[in-house]
Length: 560
View 1 (tube, helix red, strand yellow):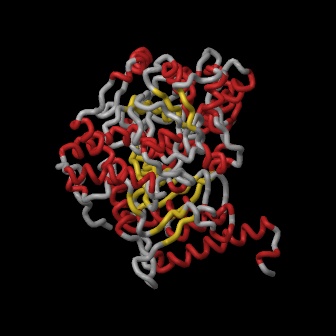
View 2 (tube, helix red, strand yellow):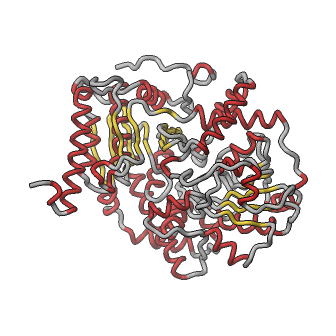
């Protein structure tokens, strides 16, 4: 029978099995050449979303760790899924599986719901809920993040009985997941853990349980630049650090390195190229439909008054990773946006542009939801019509970000990428949150709401950054967004694969052999990654020789 004549469910299953079989065959020679080794250490892989593309990446990392350093893998899946399990077995000789839903079923929900009700009862604000921690687990942050994301909401009113009940349910779910993961991690005693998603419940509880048990965790994720991934090592003391932040030791070493005019030019050229070449956050199609304009054309397109300085408020996705990183001046991204615009309205010495995040377009497509301008709705509720000196730039604007940068005199963000980019051009950026790059010397970081308000009231008097500060910003940008992304040479996580035309394989991971016809084996990218995971130092993996920084001597050949 032809596959095309099968019912969709059966056809999908058959094609997923075929894809997994191809993956296994491609790895056959590498797997067979690897003798069974007595496992000395355990790698716990949190794969609760069970997507083919991410499972293949994690399987390749796990297989390389097994081959070079004798790690056995334990994979935590949501439930049994034979195709995903076959993917891991294709790369690993020593692998077993645990199933979150089955483990959770053994944990009585009633006590956790009662405890959640007790904890929530005296709390009246989102900030109080976000600060809720129990036995080291970030219960409040994990629970609230899940509610915000599911509802695609910028704010939650705890006075609303239905919303309060939903938050209570998420707190109970977080407590139950924490108890379950504490038992699992205590039994396995893993030496390392590997995550792609590490924030939302229950992944957040797996992450916390590992760190609390002294197990280092590595998060991997797609870099902003195409064909690269980034990796961050977490311990308990840097748990709140943004995954794209630099570790203090790395930043100190970077600042001590020589820096030249050629380096300056390369950073500026790279930033401009990112927004004009189409490779920057390409998986999210952020540059799709954008047009590069001259400064005069940009001002005309935005109908800006001539000669008046421009401050751009770079809005965040109001419901995405709201509570994961650092500490914020405001309870959530929506409150920050509304209060920032309130101060903008009070300062007509500047033309203010509220730039709605372009990922709204991509996120809505991924969620299968209509494209919403939550930012515009929040501002309309707060202020009605905005005055003429405050403009809204929608998510689907045709104006290219590089073109906007060219006419920007000031930037505002909580902790977005713009805070790393604009200072490279001498543009002051005001932040409202820690955990990524605040305090490193090239942004304006008011520590209180009162100082934030005072700064925005006189922002038009703040001068451009001086040369020493600009150099700091460029050194930081180069390290964080040029040296930290690791090019994929052994494999490619293709965000537009469209394998077999299946939605389930819209993203897929393709193996890349060193030469045509050669059997696949890990290249230097995977081998260096495995050595870094095994080594425990440094926190950052950089795409340069580590000894050049003096923070990480090159790994010796693996033993055993």
